[in-house]
Length: 231
Image (cartoon, rainbow, N blue to C red; front, side):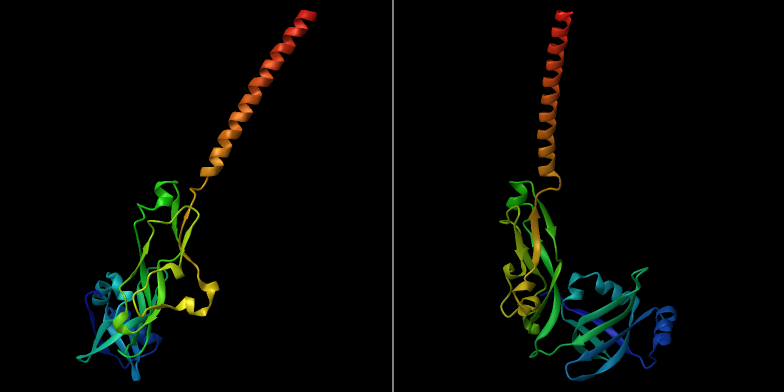
């Protein structure tokens, strides 16, 4: 588990789009809400500097956070985060409270390891492609992993690592796999370098053409010689 990330939030009574804009523009704060675990929702605000620093940590998006409201700590995870599409500034953030005895959902990052040792890359010159960078899981809070490793060492060219191939900690389930085998999508693949096979075929074709042209040149020379002799 990663170090605990703690955020101090203030309750806010002034809600609505106008109030949120004023909060962001005049007070340099981000509007937020925390809900769940059988308790009433609370509308909050957080200082931009505090939030920005916390978001620099990868675990912020997948781990259990401590949100302190009026001096009372609450355990929660980030459930949704809205950004300005132009400047990426956070416009609003949703926290979902968690309870120790209730299953929770979280999106956990994937860490790809041994890519330099991948047999499909080292022996066959393949290229690794990542289809996913994170996966949504279900587990009890105590079992929440910081990340899930994807070992690429033994992946041959033309092969893929699927969701069902991932090694999960005890008590952790990948949500997509609970919806059927057709949801067992690739996580990462090793493919031939683009143009590698085509370049070999082109080279072989060029050699063949060159040989034909040389042969044609010899035939022309011979034909020319015969004409000279006849004349």
